[in-house]
Image (cartoon, rainbow, N blue to C red; front, side, top):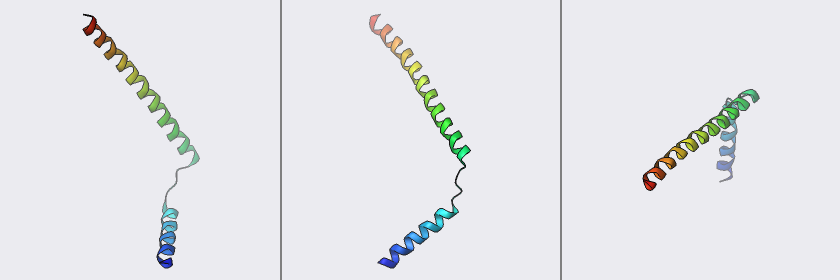
Length: 62
């Protein structure tokens, strides 16, 4: 049992050494991209919601 757990952690450590980690600059750029896309999508859906809301109000008031 102990040997199995030890092998698991040794294997996990070996695999983590193979990972190609992003640089600090790449991480910063990817974070900015995610934040920018999130804000862009929020604005897009807000505008869409406003347009649909106007359409529904026109249909109800009509």
